[in-house]
Amino acid sequence: MTGESLVARCVHGLEPTLAEEILGLGLGTITYIGHREVRFRARPAQARRPGRGTAELSTADDVFLLAAQCPDPGPRKDAAAALARLADSADSADLDGLLRPRLRHGGTGEVAGVEVSASALGRRNFTRYDVEDAVGQALARRLGVAHHSRRGGAAPPAGSNGWRVTLDGERATLLLRVADRPLHRRDYKRRSIPGTLHPPVAAAMARMAGIRPGDLVVDPCCGAGTLLIEAVRHEPQARFCGFDLAPESLQAARDNAAGLPVVLGRADAGRLPLAGGGVARVVCNPPWGGQVAPGGLLGASPARWWAELRRVLMPGGVAVALLPDVAELCTAIRWGLAPVHVQRVRIAGAQAFLIRLEAP
Image 1 (cartoon, rainbow, N blue to C red):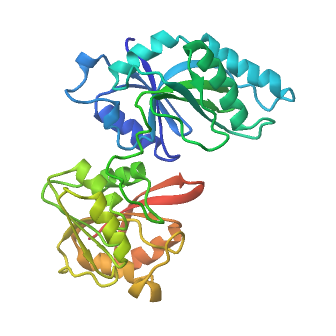
Image 2 (cartoon, rainbow, N blue to C red):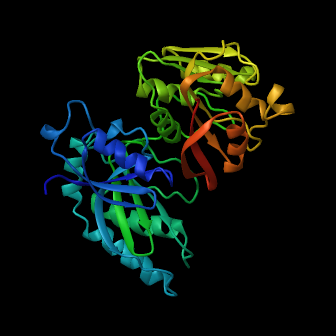
Image 3 (spheres, helix red, strand yellow):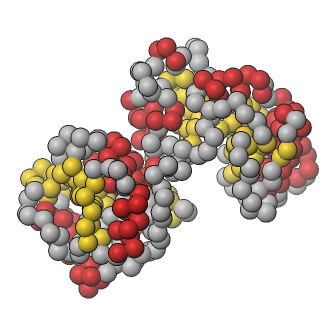
């Protein structure tokens, strides 16, 4: 089998969605699906669909080249020996063989420094910073550049190579980021507000909605506009409209969606300025009282959200929402909406559910 081994990382729960997107873009053959990652063997550039590359993956947090693997040292008592084993893995990686394919997949050849991030499943007797420094120092020594430790929280200088170490209980994996920055950091994200949705999750919701050209797509609680913008990126031939009660949210959405075909206006999600039965698709991350408290009519009666949703959706219309608890589906069902897909995800350490509902 030809082509480089690539690893796409994602929010836990989006692994099947990400695998489907990789296959749909014709980027390669799936070789493994695990916790927060999908591994695939890349197709040669001449065999891919024109213009398709790893930077097109909207549901991935990031994409890496597989650099090296060794057994996970596990929760050893001798932390120094465990860290030395991880550093040895970095010493054995074929760095020249990684930097060339990085260019082919859209990265740069510049190596101004080394930055390493690490994550581990299970308890360890060493910290992630210990792993990052051990591996980062080994890589920096081989590349002849500086290692920029993440212990102090300072951002690395421009041009630093981004590396990642994952320990999953069986394997320790060393990865080299393909792009110059993580894919989840979107260029359009000029403004943010509390409760702003993670862009790859918003992209997954847009895909789940099955938006078609000409559809009217509405977000009744649009916040900073992330869901609508990801929906535009997915199907630019649809029509897009967003509402919010908070002026600061609408201003953030206008800044982020500048130049895109998105109509924004101030309105209460419990009483939208829309005719009944005219909306083909609703995508929404409603304010259920987590980071953002419901306001207006929803503050007095959260169930009004479902009633208004049912009113504006056309027959056969689809709504995709992010919910903190599937108990909310009982109210949706009472209003005549049928749940047809439920997908559990984990965002910033908290469990949530992506729900697709259909109107009769």
